[in-house]
Amino acid sequence: MSTTGIYGLSGSGIDVDSMVKVGMMTKQNQYDKMYKEEIKNEWMKEAYSDLYSSVNEFNQSTLSTYKMSSTTSPMTATSSSEGVATATANADAANMSHTVTVSSVASNAYMQSTKAITRKNSSASSTSIYLKDLLSSTEQGPSNYSTMSDSQKLETALSFTISDGASDNSNATTKEISFTYKDLFESNQTLNDLATKIKNSGVNIQASYDSVNDSFSLYQKTGGKANQINITVGSGSTDSEKRARTLLSSLNLGIVTTADDGTQTLGSAIDYETTTSSSAEGKDGKATIDGKTYTTTGSKITVANVAYTLAGKGTTTVSVAQDTDKVVENVKQFVTDYNKMIDALNTKYYETQYSDYGVLTKSQESSMTQDQITKWNEKAKSGLLYHDSQLGKIISSMREALYTPVEGTDSDYNTMMSLGITSSTDQGHIKLDETKLKKALAADPNCVRSVFSASGDVTTTNADGTTTTTTDYDSEGVMNRISDALYKNLKTLKSYAGDSTETSDGSTLGTLIENLKTKMSDFKTQMDAYQSALYDKYDAMESAIQQLSVQLGYITGGN
Image: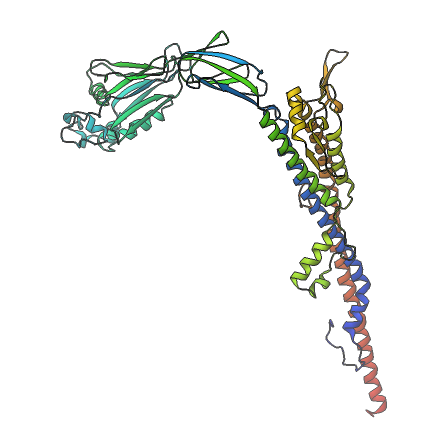
């Protein structure tokens, strides 16, 4: 529109806005060209970001699974007597049988109430949880408690020590458990507070109060003879020591002992009035495996890549063998995962391009509905990565890694084809012949592990005596080959397009988009200036015509 608002005063009949619009067409076309280029590059960056994300996920997560020996060579361990011991074997365990004789099962030090907790306060409820009610009725608090100062109330009213190990256990921890007068006689702390104080003291002992059975228990978290529960209380005649002995005796704690066969027996309640210390200890487990005796503080022990769980006295035979069914299942899953990835890449690589559909300008979008814009852009974005060179390299590297033999395996089964994995299409989709795979496993149980996950590392000694480790592609397992190739291509892809849609990531494409935005902004400023100049030009023309019209009126006398 006019910048001065005088158009038409001269009677020239010129449509200035239309003339300015025509004058701006060349500039607008130049701007639209940059806009389309910038949007197209944003679409490309988004497409590359999606590609990076899916390939990186496949490399970091999916492929990692198939490099693991537990995937390529899972083993089973079967016990002839699970009441004695059970076992699991890792991929490095030998295919053989083991004789396991358990002479004793490990246990943890354990103390618990032999009967309901005794409450010395005759006026208290039989189910009171307050610690003060475990004390005698005359110990409900000093007669002058109400007149005690705050500092006196915070003095220790009772204390005892608890330790979680034998004297020769360097890891043993000893802590004092104490309660102030305020804790007992004003804050009314309970059996649950006693359990919490023991648990939080730093000793490796679990304490708990069972309100249903009115029972208190102490449990050493670590098994074995050296890991104990030791309680010591003062034997003197001070009120603090008396209260501590009364409190502990009221818990009616007995020591639980465990026989070699795992049978447990609860001893008599400990009277801390006459015995000022008690000690409960666990039992070490002992097992003889293939003629060698082992001692353990827990139920588990690992020998020669077989993890045994000791359950009871006796002898059992543990047979270790490859889990062929699991190997086949895992290879089938690899074929599924690989095809999912290669098919997704091929879909993008061969995706149809629609040359008649390009980036819409803002002006074009203004004349369309949102649904029309969405459908148009779907066509315009189709085929963005059609025959893209970087995508092509990723596909080629995956296929090459799959079909190149793995050298140095010392086996006739050194290719994916020998394991029954072959192409089903000319675009790299693969299939599995299970019968052929099972035949290969029967002949060479280690074949899948070798072909899938051989490291390919080669170490050479330099002249100065140092060593250098390199990777030999031909000796590398298929999973490592694919992973290395994808890592290399992802690094290149990230350098060119980044790993997200962010344009300020320093990537080549991101920098290009940023530069285009700057260029467009500068050009837009130039367009505004040019448009203003055109309006100024037509303003001057209108003013001149108006002046000529006035002068003509004077000359003609208005006729």
